[in-house]
Length: 374
Image: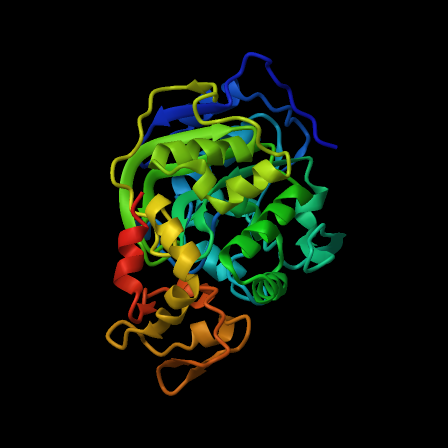
């Protein structure tokens, strides 16, 4: 059972200026703003541990944020577990990724491979009716989600809502990618997974975010903000305002509004702290701006036909990780990755490649980047 203490006058979002290392005093201010009754309670701290990326790449949640959150929770008497389900298949690399990203050492004995125990739960989704979720998610009294603010080639952004996709054990992610590979369809699935167990508090690492071809091959962008809220949907709504994107252009927020999970506008948010929209934040080439949306609606098939994925041989080390992680097994190594006709352009290979070797090619990639501008 979730137990939390809510102040009726508390803001929707609390914003702070921040740099690395993130200190415990900043987390204390967040917990003062959004009180949680954690003493003797099981608390799951869920960062973004996408893959084998060091903190300076701006791909994963910074270990200093995770460390400070864990220390503040332990000081309040919480029984803390830190865990995620990085990657797409299996769970063998779980602890290796945690060590590589610096998070395992930052939280010491609190880190657990939460993929080892899973429970089948009902999923209200039009393509799939059940999924395997890490048992730790279901057994926790409270969940504190620590997403990294990034763009995403398939889902446009990854932040509060998307971070809950890590509830699923590896094989389940692969299955859902193959069943709902189009951008909006996949975002529907993400909102469905989010609805299984929304986090009780979301704290976003936006000190250094990622723009462009996220979630792993984009460009680090210093924003210098740490922000938090009880409602991850409202946190993502604030994110849209922060990066200067109309919320209706973000599939996850549009779907959340359709589902009755979002009734506010950015202007109506109660925000504590100073902020202003980031100028010229680069969205991925798959994002449809107001201009791009009209063009995509008219000539969408041409856009998709004119764009494909390929490997940059100068960056590729022929590790085969992309082929191993492909949900539809459309990639063959020969000796570099070759993309077959079965490719569904789900960008899983792009997301998981630790060397940024997978990129878009084809006739329309440059117009797509132009139309993606907000």
